[in-house]
Length: 469
Image 1 (tube, rainbow, N blue to C red):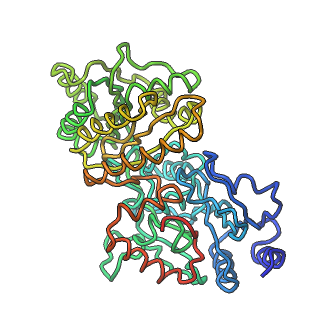
Image 2 (spheres, helix red, strand yellow):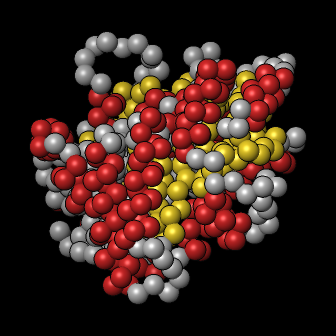
């Protein structure tokens, strides 16, 4: 089918306002926000509901038209960008903004896939509930994208990944059929966990159109502090101590090395050093409670013991919501600071927490020994073993040197990750970025199982081709 006929038929399904056919208006859709990937598309289709998505998928199935599903386009791995063939249409969920139901008694919320994460958080707060998924892009990312990539964020240590927050899904399959799995059940032992197949599938198996999500009691009090430590090993020791004291009240345990903090202080307006002493390792820790009457005395005692033992070299405890926001602003400013800092070789990796210290020592030796003029920018979620182990090239680096360094360090760092029984993608997804590496790090059996599922649910290979597998 020629492009004009396809666009006309899509416009008949979603209305004239639901198609973006002019190339000049497609820029926000055909390029990722990092500027790494750029493609072409004959049309962006923007359905308003599941019925329209189903009709779009039936048309694509009939015409063998490949399709890329896109939410807020905030991904880090190129998973929502079309290729350069101008054959793949983009299905944007941004007009699917309906909050379908809020059930405070069942602690669930049912939403369209295009609802912004921040709007889900705000809706939950109106009924004194918490939706705990928290990301730097929460004002622009959609819940459908979060589910499709199994997003992590800063509260995984307490609440888990997105996978742990989803009770039910609604998915439109590649042939247009709709699977209605919108069940707000915490126990359902009636067969395969179908929702688990689609969570983290990056749009390669179907279009997620709705979800039932878990809610939790609203946070009434919290203690937030920025701590200075000597080493990654000390941070793991401190994590275990705090978990022993606070159990599930430990909500966040975020880490930044000093070079990472320096990058933020340089690249983010009005950012100020949180500590009077420079620390090799910086930890942002947060303890939260559903009761407003919880005393901060236990937190102060635990912190005092850590300082007396020498684990913590310096500390500042937030005394106001403004100070809390300021400390979190340093952590959340890293992505922007890295873009301003130049070209980075990024590694979104997961490791057993017990392996963090030896891994970082070996990885640092590799990077400093191979490219001594590059800077390691290491930060991440120590509480769940997820490091963003990035290597920043010098400003003005030659493109050929940067490309060669990227290939060499990716191989060396990811081989080391595998030696420590880790994962080369912790929360950003595979997309285009890690697709070609996946075969090296997945066993043949595991990769074949993935391909078997792909062939069963997308036999014509129309769903987000060229991504993940």
